[in-house]
Image (cartoon, rainbow, N blue to C red; front, side, top):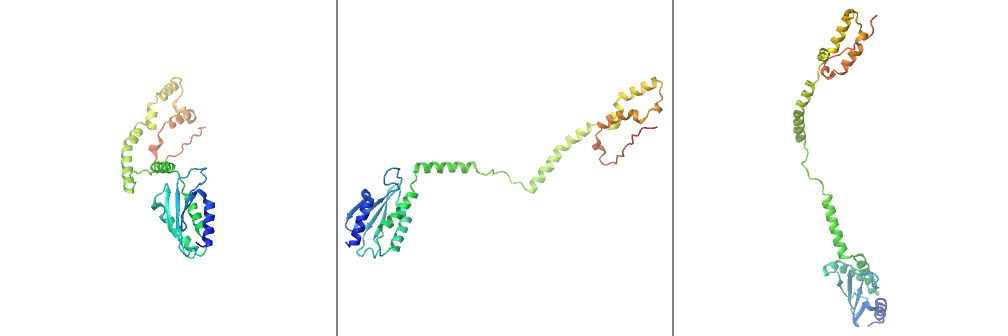
Length: 231
């Protein structure tokens, strides 16, 4: 064992303490945890397994990542590839601590409570179901025109019946017996009908006009009536 490698192993042992394990002079293991002090829960952990090459650090050691807590081997295959690539980038220098730092960063990011993660996935699934867009019948131009035609046909009888129930101005005038009574009173009082002025019957005409359905005369021109009082 070279002095440089010996110094590196001693430093790693001091840093990782109980999480450092020396199998033999060429073989060491370091357990990487998100919270090695145990002050917070650890849901994942990885063991970095190192077998030093004869000419280390001028060549990379044999590197293996062993899932230790909450992980399967397939979960860390991509990470192992990154660790090996990092080792190749640091040939010629002590690299184990650098590799440990890369693994520690990964376990920190993935230290997730599996029960909480399952609960969030369930909530997300329920939210997606709630937000599922309404799937109705698409409205096409043909469907709209068919609906419009049906609507018009269904409402026509109602409109006609409503209009038939309205009286014309003439009918209102003929059915208003108060006009006949007023004429009778005038005759009884000896007043000539011919002497009745427009001004005297104007209020009654306005009352009748207010009850007329003027929509029946929509296609006819209606001239304004001159209500100027006769001299």
